[in-house]
Length: 191
Image 1: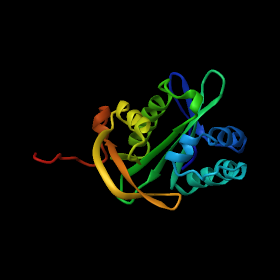
Image 2 (image 1 turned 135 degrees about the horizontal axis):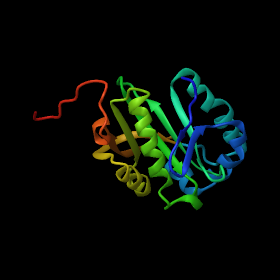
Image 3 (image 1 turned 60 degrees about the vertical axis):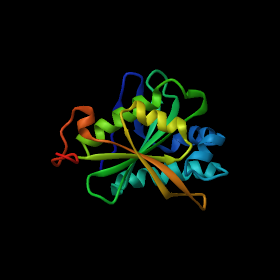
Image 4 (image 1 turned 90 degrees about the horizontal axis):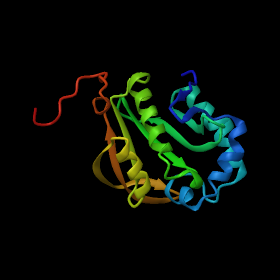
Protein backbone atom coordinates (compact mmCIF):
# COMPACT_ATOMS: atom_id res chain seq x y z
CA UNK A 1 0.00 0.00 0.00
CA UNK A 2 1.13 3.50 -0.72
CA UNK A 3 1.86 5.20 2.64
CA UNK A 4 -0.83 7.67 3.69
CA UNK A 5 -1.29 10.43 6.25
CA UNK A 6 -4.32 10.85 8.51
CA UNK A 7 -5.29 14.04 10.32
CA UNK A 8 -7.47 14.72 13.33
CA UNK A 9 -8.33 17.90 15.19
CA UNK A 10 -4.98 17.91 17.04
CA UNK A 11 -2.86 15.26 15.37
CA UNK A 12 -1.19 14.07 12.20
CA UNK A 13 -0.65 10.33 11.78
CA UNK A 14 2.02 9.81 9.16
CA UNK A 15 4.43 7.05 8.19
CA UNK A 16 7.65 6.99 10.17
CA UNK A 17 10.73 8.45 8.51
CA UNK A 18 14.43 8.09 9.37
CA UNK A 19 14.31 11.61 10.90
CA UNK A 20 12.00 10.21 13.62
CA UNK A 21 14.74 8.01 15.10
CA UNK A 22 15.75 10.56 17.76
CA UNK A 23 12.18 10.97 19.01
CA UNK A 24 11.48 7.23 18.98
CA UNK A 25 14.73 6.50 20.79
CA UNK A 26 13.99 9.11 23.48
CA UNK A 27 10.40 7.93 24.02
CA UNK A 28 11.36 4.25 24.18
CA UNK A 29 13.76 4.88 27.05
CA UNK A 30 10.62 4.99 29.22
CA UNK A 31 10.41 1.99 31.54
CA UNK A 32 6.65 1.60 30.95
CA UNK A 33 7.03 1.41 27.17
CA UNK A 34 9.77 -1.20 27.53
CA UNK A 35 7.78 -3.12 30.15
CA UNK A 36 4.39 -3.25 28.46
CA UNK A 37 5.26 -3.39 24.75
CA UNK A 38 7.40 -5.70 22.68
CA UNK A 39 10.05 -3.07 21.92
CA UNK A 40 13.56 -4.27 22.76
CA UNK A 41 14.82 -3.72 26.29
CA UNK A 42 17.21 -2.08 26.71
CA UNK A 43 16.24 0.10 23.75
CA UNK A 44 19.26 1.17 21.71
CA UNK A 45 19.63 3.99 19.20
CA UNK A 46 20.10 1.31 16.51
CA UNK A 47 16.65 -0.12 17.39
CA UNK A 48 15.04 3.26 16.64
CA UNK A 49 16.97 3.57 13.39
CA UNK A 50 15.94 0.09 12.23
CA UNK A 51 12.30 0.73 13.19
CA UNK A 52 12.02 4.12 11.45
CA UNK A 53 14.22 3.51 8.38
CA UNK A 54 13.64 -0.19 7.62
CA UNK A 55 10.84 -2.01 9.48
CA UNK A 56 8.15 0.64 9.15
CA UNK A 57 8.71 1.39 5.44
CA UNK A 58 8.91 -2.36 4.68
CA UNK A 59 5.54 -2.91 6.38
CA UNK A 60 3.89 -0.39 4.06
CA UNK A 61 5.67 -1.88 1.04
CA UNK A 62 4.59 -5.47 1.68
CA UNK A 63 1.19 -4.68 3.27
CA UNK A 64 2.05 -6.50 6.49
CA UNK A 65 1.91 -3.56 8.92
CA UNK A 66 1.10 0.11 8.81
CA UNK A 67 3.03 2.09 11.43
CA UNK A 68 2.13 5.71 12.06
CA UNK A 69 4.12 8.38 13.83
CA UNK A 70 1.58 10.30 15.94
CA UNK A 71 2.62 13.97 15.90
CA UNK A 72 1.03 17.21 17.04
CA UNK A 73 -0.45 19.30 14.22
CA UNK A 74 0.70 22.54 15.82
CA UNK A 75 4.43 21.77 15.90
CA UNK A 76 5.13 18.26 14.53
CA UNK A 77 6.28 16.95 17.90
CA UNK A 78 6.23 13.14 18.13
CA UNK A 79 3.84 12.08 20.90
CA UNK A 80 3.46 8.38 20.13
CA UNK A 81 3.25 5.50 17.71
CA UNK A 82 0.32 3.48 16.41
CA UNK A 83 0.49 0.39 14.23
CA UNK A 84 -2.05 -1.76 12.40
CA UNK A 85 -1.01 -5.32 11.59
CA UNK A 86 -2.63 -8.11 9.58
CA UNK A 87 -3.99 -11.06 11.56
CA UNK A 88 -4.48 -14.55 10.14
CA UNK A 89 -8.25 -14.28 9.62
CA UNK A 90 -9.08 -12.22 6.50
CA UNK A 91 -10.47 -8.78 7.34
CA UNK A 92 -9.00 -8.90 10.85
CA UNK A 93 -6.26 -6.52 11.95
CA UNK A 94 -4.56 -5.83 15.26
CA UNK A 95 -3.74 -2.39 16.58
CA UNK A 96 -0.93 -1.50 18.97
CA UNK A 97 0.31 1.81 20.33
CA UNK A 98 2.53 3.63 22.77
CA UNK A 99 2.52 7.20 24.02
CA UNK A 100 5.50 9.19 25.25
CA UNK A 101 5.40 9.67 29.02
CA UNK A 102 5.08 13.46 28.90
CA UNK A 103 2.12 13.25 26.49
CA UNK A 104 -0.06 10.77 28.40
CA UNK A 105 -3.42 11.74 29.84
CA UNK A 106 -4.33 14.23 27.11
CA UNK A 107 -6.44 11.95 24.93
CA UNK A 108 -3.99 11.93 22.02
CA UNK A 109 -3.84 8.16 21.71
CA UNK A 110 -7.62 7.72 21.84
CA UNK A 111 -7.97 10.38 19.14
CA UNK A 112 -5.32 8.67 16.99
CA UNK A 113 -6.85 5.23 17.57
CA UNK A 114 -10.29 6.37 16.43
CA UNK A 115 -8.85 7.93 13.26
CA UNK A 116 -6.86 4.80 12.53
CA UNK A 117 -9.87 2.55 13.18
CA UNK A 118 -11.99 4.58 10.74
CA UNK A 119 -9.21 4.29 8.14
CA UNK A 120 -8.87 0.54 8.75
CA UNK A 121 -12.59 -0.03 8.20
CA UNK A 122 -12.90 2.20 5.15
CA UNK A 123 -9.54 1.89 3.34
CA UNK A 124 -8.37 -1.58 4.36
CA UNK A 125 -11.80 -3.20 4.37
CA UNK A 126 -11.31 -4.44 7.92
CA UNK A 127 -14.27 -6.17 9.54
CA UNK A 128 -12.63 -6.52 12.96
CA UNK A 129 -9.92 -4.50 14.68
CA UNK A 130 -8.36 -6.26 17.67
CA UNK A 131 -6.52 -4.73 20.58
CA UNK A 132 -4.40 -6.94 22.84
CA UNK A 133 -2.29 -5.98 25.83
CA UNK A 134 -0.62 -7.85 28.61
CA UNK A 135 -2.90 -8.37 31.61
CA UNK A 136 -2.16 -5.49 33.97
CA UNK A 137 -1.59 -2.83 31.31
CA UNK A 138 -4.52 -0.78 32.57
CA UNK A 139 -3.60 2.48 30.75
CA UNK A 140 -3.67 0.72 27.36
CA UNK A 141 -6.97 -0.93 28.23
CA UNK A 142 -8.42 2.46 29.19
CA UNK A 143 -7.45 3.94 25.82
CA UNK A 144 -9.03 1.01 23.97
CA UNK A 145 -12.25 1.29 25.99
CA UNK A 146 -12.49 5.06 25.41
CA UNK A 147 -12.16 4.38 21.66
CA UNK A 148 -15.12 1.97 21.86
CA UNK A 149 -13.37 -1.40 21.93
CA UNK A 150 -15.45 -4.06 23.65
CA UNK A 151 -13.44 -6.17 26.05
CA UNK A 152 -13.78 -9.85 25.18
CA UNK A 153 -11.72 -11.52 27.88
CA UNK A 154 -8.29 -12.94 28.56
CA UNK A 155 -6.10 -15.23 26.53
CA UNK A 156 -3.63 -17.38 28.39
CA UNK A 157 -0.02 -17.41 27.19
CA UNK A 158 -0.98 -15.39 24.09
CA UNK A 159 1.95 -12.96 24.02
CA UNK A 160 5.65 -13.65 23.79
CA UNK A 161 7.42 -10.60 25.21
CA UNK A 162 11.19 -10.63 25.63
CA UNK A 163 11.33 -14.41 25.86
CA UNK A 164 8.47 -14.80 28.37
CA UNK A 165 4.94 -15.94 27.54
CA UNK A 166 2.28 -13.70 29.07
CA UNK A 167 -1.50 -13.61 29.42
CA UNK A 168 -3.32 -10.87 27.50
CA UNK A 169 -6.54 -8.95 27.58
CA UNK A 170 -8.30 -8.81 24.22
CA UNK A 171 -10.87 -6.39 22.89
CA UNK A 172 -12.34 -5.68 19.49
CA UNK A 173 -13.92 -2.87 17.54
CA UNK A 174 -16.25 -3.55 14.61
CA UNK A 175 -17.24 -1.18 11.81
CA UNK A 176 -20.80 -1.07 13.18
CA UNK A 177 -19.41 0.28 16.48
CA UNK A 178 -18.48 3.42 14.54
CA UNK A 179 -21.64 3.47 12.43
CA UNK A 180 -19.82 2.09 9.38
CA UNK A 181 -20.77 -0.84 7.13
CA UNK A 182 -18.60 -3.94 7.16
CA UNK A 183 -17.15 -5.72 4.15
CA UNK A 184 -19.07 -8.87 5.06
CA UNK A 185 -22.42 -9.38 6.79
CA UNK A 186 -22.20 -9.87 10.54
CA UNK A 187 -24.84 -11.77 12.48
CA UNK A 188 -24.30 -11.59 16.27
CA UNK A 189 -24.86 -14.75 18.30
CA UNK A 190 -28.51 -15.44 19.12
CA UNK A 191 -29.96 -13.77 16.04
